[in-house]
Length: 227
Image (tube, rainbow, N blue to C red):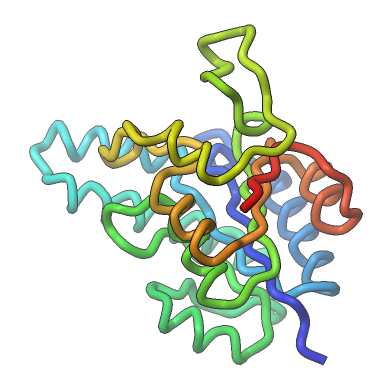
């Protein structure tokens, strides 16, 4: 029987200059466990390492499109780290576009990839992949607890939404900064894809425990984006 497909976006904060193999092995084991119930497509962010290369390249004079490509390359290196811990139950390469994603699906294996198109965050990439693959849900694992009415890292009184309508999200993000490496939580492209495809989406803080609660146990945490 063909398994339902889900998309999990992993925060780039998992991949850091001091990341240990033991941390990544825990995530690999969790993805393996999820693969027993679903066909997961995991999208890895670039994180601080990508921002390091982006900022350095910007200072060297590289244009914004080139900076996007630099971030994409780093995200694929991050993806390869997880692939290396999953063996033959995982598709062996990181698909580079939606057509390659479609081809990889035929293997019925776990798929792990990074960014795809310049000018798009890995959030947008994840939403597009979910739409293309007919995923039943998009899990966006971030470095904060969910979606707030203001930035909780600046405003200690920011209120987290339990659920939020996608149209309200779009209104909140109309002035989103589109410079490479500045994307945060959800961006306008990802929200528009969620809206048009009526894609069930949840934004939550990335951790082994939270992913297991949400994906495998169906426990509500974070913020659910409603259509």
